[in-house]
Amino acid sequence: MRRHNINDFNSINEVIKFQKSFSTLRQHIISNHEQLIENEKIALVAEISQLDNTIKTEKAHFENSFRREIEELTQKLNNLSTSTGLNFIQRLIKFIKQWSLKVKLQILELNLNNKVSSAVSSLVEQYQFKTNRHQFITSHFRDAVNESCLAEINKIEYKLRIIDEVKSSIFGALGEHKVVKELENLSDDNVLINNFTLNFHPAIYNRQENDYIKSIQIDHLLITPSGIFLIETKSWSEKSLASLDLRSPVQQIKRTSFALFKILTGYISSDRVKIKQHHWGDRKNTSKKPDCIDKFKTKRGVSVC
Image (cartoon, rainbow, N blue to C red; front, side):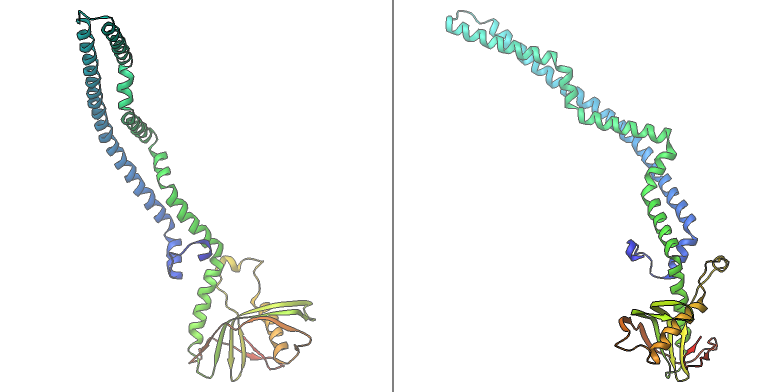
């Protein structure tokens, strides 16, 4: 699960609990976001009202400011008009000033509304956005909730999908853990090796089964004074037991015991078949033997369970 960036489960029990409570968890997320959207709707009403008042106040402020500027320009223009007894140079300067003031005055008067609108444009944009959002929530409440909780729902659905994909491994690990706990009760004369694996190159040929064995994996290899036991752990549901495609653990044991027999009896030599890779698993001493282990010896001395 870590390979899929799922790191919030600390035990198999937590995974099982998540699976069982998925529907409840999903509904809980939806309910939380329903409340969030309701709260957002209430907040939007207050924000829209406040923005409306702010826009009106700011418009009045800027409009008064621009009108004062127009009045000041008009007053300057009137003062120039009353000037008399000027020479040619002074009259030319006066004309230029009057022309400049008239142009400024005309621009201000023509663009008064535009200037006021531009001054409050950012507030108007906020007002429009919040108004549209409020209308959407009011008219399409369920869609708003679905959009709000989409990320969280996708996250838990992804977790569930990955768990379903790897659940055989999860429950297999749980079964193997239970077996290990039982085998740890054996005496110290016994040695338990978990997840014993070997790779062979070239492959071992099993003539009886017409099978080329390239690798073996044994869930538990138990070495005791009375023999070696190969233990294959399965954690099966009733549904899996009904499947015709279910791989027989008996066949797995036959296959792995044949390969192990070849090793122990010296049929694999360094010249003929080399062990390319091996992994001896987690070696643990055990203390007490449980009653659940049935064993028998093969005619060649390798015990299988």
